[in-house]
Image (cartoon, one colour):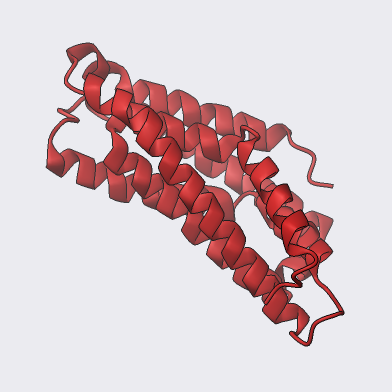
Length: 210
């Protein structure tokens, strides 16, 4: 449940945040172009899944407890960066395949789904976002508890985020599906995704958590 007086402000803030390019957008766009819309949708669903988990952690107070520990945030940051770096190396070493086949797209879809989930869960910035952003829209003017309001705000955020990402995939994925049969694309698509993961690792490693 959300305070109706705060809802317009919240929706405006969420839309503004969605329009700002970030690591999630980079991953989803890269996956859509490199492997097609099916894989882009899978990455979007992975992003939404991690958002739901972070929402639950925020509503139960777990996120706030972690956020209070600089050591925990720093450890999470380094583990996340190392994980992204490992993904980059593994993707770089992957053999070129015919990405136009349904079997390959399904396999890459599962692959990118899991990686999108882990990338967000190991990102202290994402955890801090849920801790610092959502509570700003908790109201004392309605009967719903803070936890219920946090869950509702988080669910709405993830629903809007998923809708936005699916629209993004529909736009850029059309280009991806058109070029997947190009032999040069098949040769370098894993290299492109490896570079994306490496950039995300560097971005996460260099961020200030507090």
